[in-house]
Length: 355
Image (cartoon, rainbow, N blue to C red):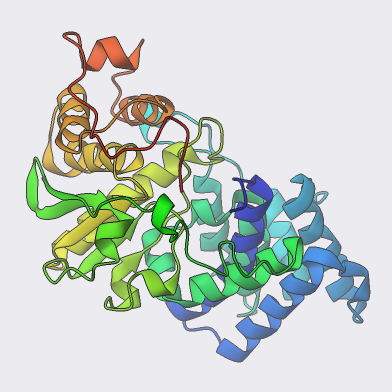
């Protein structure tokens, strides 16, 4: 399995964003496919684009994905490719203040909002690819991920194949950790604040449980993991369980919690899970309880970690949740569990083994 790489986040985002934008804002799907094809050219061979304007745009997208180098300030234009460069470079980036609900990654939303006002309808498609090449698929909102459905995986697989080649025994070509010695016993437990949300691991999702009608998956998934689910009710944020691996950690946690809330508002029973259901899952479950159910931040974190028999091997997740709630933690273990943590679920893997 490929290790977390922010370049993959950005490449997958650039490949997925035009389709999501076209479906959400009624743009021509054939034009979205053309932009996506240009993205794939840009990932590895931008110099091969035959049209000069395409080639310039592809070189800028290539630089964003591979080095996060932004294009220079660009004048506005009636051409959608040049206009996308202008919108990306001229839309102000907000400050990053999690406690005030102002995040740097909101720049993606602001840029796309501006692009929708441009007279050329394809400007939104080029801008979506360009801006998400900077922020990554981890910055896309739940509406975009749901609009993609299984195309999220299709576009991601094509983008990562362009970067790394085809590896049939590795994700995204193959589901994660399916060998018997890597699987965990299926696990699920009710959310302590909302019994319409179940918490668990990917091996429970793979049993095709009948109660949940929707899922929010916080680990790398494959369409074969949940063929029983409507793909528009299966939200798959890009979230890793290693400190420093998440480019947009506060934003991704916020969007994952929002996805749970949206699906609950629609009447779904939601299955919230990651690979083991012990670190990412309780973090998002706690943020959902804090922001949508009025739970106390430290209480919610302690309760959700305890409910899944989880751990704080990666305390950056708990710290980020507390930052978003405006109640920073000094030391996650002692702040949340002054009397000591409860027992770790016996089937959990050793620290830093993740999926």
